[in-house]
Image 1 (cartoon, rainbow, N blue to C red):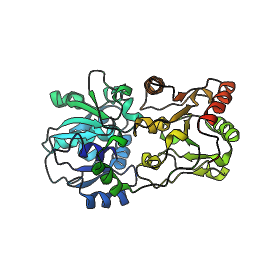
Image 2 (tube, rainbow, N blue to C red):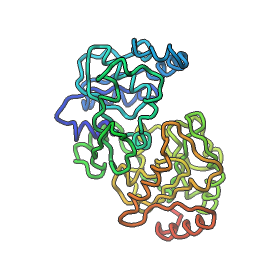
Image 3 (tube, rainbow, N blue to C red):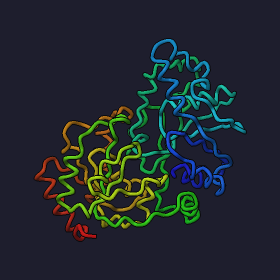
Length: 355
């Protein structure tokens, strides 16, 4: 969705193509993108195969030499034109190899980013500096030396930088011109408003690099507000629904842009909660819309660990500062007593927990 917003706003003067990674199922979306004509061409990028190939190389000399023939590790789509710029969702192996694949084809694009939530805001490029690849062989064309602008909804949240990128703002979704919102609708459609007063965002599962024990605090909140008054948004990387079998309503997982689940919802009358997901800030971050956020990160046993988000704690602290600047909209209870008092206050603010 953010690529569509960027193409119809900050990049609208220039034609562009889009490559969809196969790490998610974009089969239905691909045809809609082609029919709407936002992008000139729509390609598929076999990032999953590349990830497997890279793992097989292990560490050491084989990995260091992988950039000599990048397309043998991450197969490139058959591109029909040359590019002067490449915009990526975040710093990753798939992103770096796509850039070097373009160099292998004789191109020399500048590199920017279009925000994709927490993983973009928290980029520090430490993974690139320590990835074991021989970037130095490219001299001034090395990945880190070609980085330019990171476009995102809330530049103040960015921890990314280290001298590698500058940040610039995309317009919040609610501030977009009607023609841009119509283009997004044509691709993604519209979701029904969420009726439950509290929406819980699941944290990243263990298989995707996250490690947390959020279920006890989640169940405590559910018992307090009433299970029928709570809905769950599963993490995009989650392959197992832990909540539906317990009787909770799970929001539609088929939405290719999960943010749009909340487009038709009056978030001022909702509480968006999570123990380990930045998604609970979707109202303020993506839409620029008032909402109440409940962070439960200090109430879970153990800690949430995300390899690509080295400063996840700092990102959440910065989000609290930014979104609480004009008036308090984000709460972070430190113990069960504070949680109970916070839920009592929020219940009054949203007009009771019953829909």
